[in-house]
Structure formats: C-alpha cells, structure tokens
Image (cartoon, rainbow, N blue to C red):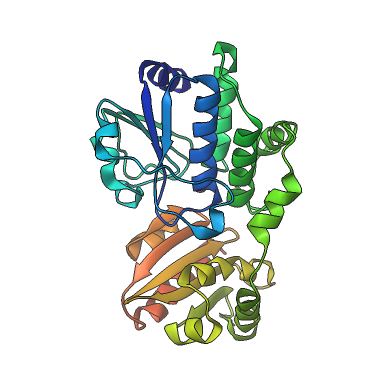
Length: 313
Ligand SMILES: [Mn+2]
C-alpha cells in the first residue's frame, strides 16, 4: 500500500493534506510531518495543509488558506481521521483523488485508497514508516518534519506510556531525535499547564467518583467551567489525570459543551469502544469518545462501563 501511495504522490502536482476536527498533536504532527517530507522531497510540487486552528498547537504548524479551485485535479490525503464527518474542512471532497491514512479502527472506509494500521501507535508513526519505505526512492526527511512526527508520536502515546506504544515506536522516535531538533522544547510546549487548568485538576482529584468495581467518573458542568475559566477542550484533556489512581480500571469524563455533554472514555484493559459507540461515538479499544444529550444518561453510561468491567474480571 505504501508503494501505491508513493506512486500517487508522484503523479500529482497539487497535494492538499487534511486531518481531523478538534486536532491533537498527532493530527498536526502527521499532517504537518507529511507536508514537510513532501516539500523537501518534491520542491516543484505545491503542498498545502488545511483545517481549523487549535491555538495551543500553533507552535507545531500554521495552516494554509486556499481557495476552492486549488482542489481541481489535486490529490487529497487525510491523516488520522476515522470518519468523514470528522475531517476538518469538508472541501476534501473536491479533490480528484482521496487517500486515507489512519490508525483508528476502519469503521468508515472512505477515499480511493486506504492505508489503515490499527497496530500503529499514531498516524505520525505511519508517516515515518512511509518515509522509511520511500527513502530508497529519494524521499527526504527534514529536521522540521522530524520534530512534527516526534510530537505526534509523543502526543498519541502519552509520552510512550499508553499500551499502543510498540517496539517500532521507540525505534522510530530514536531515529527521529537524531535529526537534532530541540526535543525538550517539544515537551515543554506540549505539556505546559495553564494556572486555571492546574487548579481545575485539583478540583478533579477532589471530586471524582469511583465504584467498587473500578469505574471512575467525573462530571464537569458549565458552571464549573465558568468558575475555573477553562474551555471544554481543556477540561476534557484532564481525563488522563485519573489513569494512575489505584482501583480505577475504566474511567470516564463528562464535560458540558453547548447543549451537549462530551464523554471521554479511558481503560487499563476492559474494551470500552463498544460503549462509546452506543452513545454516538467510537474510537480505540482503550481510549474513545462519545456525546450524550442529557445528564440522565450519565448513570446509564456508568452502568454500561460497570458491565464491561464485570465481564472482563
Ligand atoms: Mn492519532
């Protein structure tokens, strides 16, 4: 598949790279890393990156603003995005050919060519693999591409902590840091905490709940978001806080956003993406997301997680 993708890249002069909405470091890293590889390898091609900005990730890459006509006869590559509804900038459809490169379960196959590897820790890891494969044919990896791919791998593996981390992840990360970018700077930008978020973290540790079977949960209402002056996205990221607490096997965050409640699931073993799917969501077996529309559903979600925990113990 990598060879077929490379062949297509060779054939197009205009290449537009997309990623998912509410971008995370892997979305930016895989998109930006691929763009930098292609720019360094094919100086005469026009390579663009598009999508909404995430202010906290602008240190990684700035997006291009392009008119619709650029899509005419262009190759579109979508990174790190499982379903079409989540592609940031829906103009991706205007391209002549669409390639999906992703590591989420392939529940919604789309595009003319698909490369999906659910064993990859991150989409950035896949992009690095594409480079490794294409190296013999002349692909070039710049220091900037290395920085972006490293940031994506670090982001999706939680600094090499999550079980998705595999031997390749360490090998590739080791190869990437040889390019000489300042990796402590990447960590600093990715993990610096705003004061109000740190204080909300304290609130989470004080107020989370846990059932006797190991289902942890946390509800963050609009009122709390306002009190701490924290955005729903910032609050949702605190889901990882509960990961190290003993007795918690599976945990869930409910964060109010507009008239919806965003749900984030995490697990140390029991598979939870089935529950996410039931509530208008999906994702990885041990890390998924969903959306519910009333506070009454909170108890139902916890009951479903409880069931998952009991089945596997
Ligand atoms: Mn990813």
